[in-house]
Amino acid sequence: MVAGLTKGERQLALLISIAVAFIGLAMAGAGQGGAFGVHGFIVMAFGIGTIFVVISGYFLPEPGDERLAQYYDDPIKFGIVVSMVWAVFGMFIGDWVAWLLAYPEMTFDAGWASFGRLRPVHTTAVIFGFVGNALIATSFQVVQRTSRARLPDQLSPWFVLIGYNLFCVIAVSGYFMGLTQSKEYAEPEWYADLWLVVVWVVYFLLYLRTLMRRREPHIYVANWYYLAFILVVAILHIVNNLAVPISFGHAKSYSAFSGVQDAMTQWWYGHNAVAFFLTAGFLAMLYYYLPKRAGRPIYSYRMSIVGFWGITFFYMWVGSHHLHYTALPLWVQNLGMTFSLMLLVPSWIAAANALLTLNGAWHKVRTDATLRFMMVAAVF
Amino acid sequence: MSFDHGMLVGFAKSYGLFYLLGLSVAVLIYTYWPSNRARFDRAAKSVLNDEDGPWQ
Image (cartoon, rainbow over all chains, first blue to last red; front, side):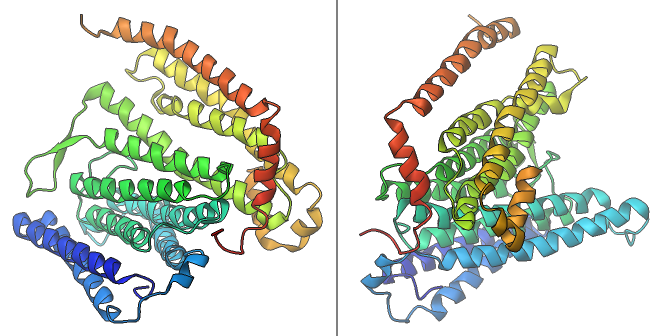
């Protein structure tokens, strides 16, 4: 992994790792043994770990210019492996949480093993750890191939992937210690949120820089979905997590919103965070990997564009359907309900487009397990 | 002038409606504009053969 970096990138990687280790040290000092301090030690260990990784490969020969004639796939392989590790962990905890429903007393009289703490561990590990890593890794693969361009540098994809996993580790370890903002799917506290903003901005810029280097005149539709995923998650994350910490040495913070506004902001976030992770991101995968695997172009490229704008604009309005029969103004509830029904149109467009693409390749579906999974996914 | 509830509702119901309608029309015109067809067909086929590495 370090062998692929140029000399300058290795030095920059070392600098970033040292900076992260010092931030961790400062957090550990300011936290004074509380949960915030524990997180400081985790951040510091993470920084020191990457320092060792960079040093171990620091004096390897630099990659030559022949690398520029190939796609940069090393971080993609890493991302997929990490994604699988999160999947195993997240689904194991999910199973555990399910057993807690049958045997609620199975908590060993310990806070960390209670349902309220383990449940967000499960959702975060699966949605952010498993799905998030898969989306980031596949987006690197798709954007390079559809643009016929290599990623602009070797360091930022690693920064995005490793930094993102630091966020996931901080989030999950915080729940065990009882740290939460009490916002579903946005449980991590303010410092984890700030770190994710840094990582996500680098990700967004990396994606745009790759697209700017493209040799293909038209930006393929899968990239639109990935960009919507990146941009919308950034907006949702920043707005919903606006909060004021009680001090820079303490994990606890208070949301900038209160009452019904807080509830509406949370569910505008909650519905769309999952929508743009699990729908937009996965449609991006579908519009690239399904035609590839079937060996046929997408049935209707125009339908995929109409579906794209339908999904992005309808989805933004449906969050209020999580708050039916509450203090939320009735017209906002009606709006969410109506847009939720309208969403049937773009989702059936995507499903029809996928199945019609397979029409004529059914012999492959019969024998190809990957294609079978994609078909079942499209039907659902 | 202060932003009260009634004003925001009025804004959402008037401007919000027409902006979404206008946007839908613009998207449909772009999608079905005849000269865009060749570009879309090319893009759809282009992804099937892209493993030979970046174009220099």
